[in-house]
Length: 103
Image (cartoon, rainbow, N blue to C red):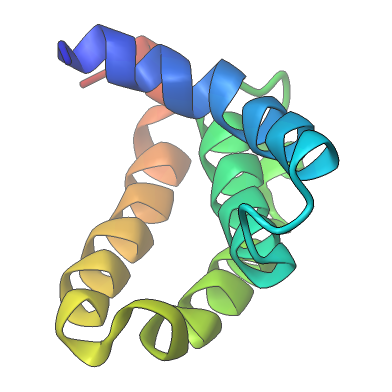
């Protein structure tokens, strides 16, 4: 996939698709994984575009819950990079504005 296609999937299609699949095929995705992805989905969507900086004030709560569950779902090896990258992402957005407006 191109980066733009992946971004569209993650930001607009991923969560609704998972929920729809879960409704059609109840055993295809564990609820815990959908919940975990929804935390990431909310975090990234909010950091991408917001009207006021106060809208991102609660994002560390979503990030901390997401990262707290990460190692138990996907293993400790992948946790280190995710923690580092996602915390810096929040700091960058606070400093420079929404992700939609910078690289």
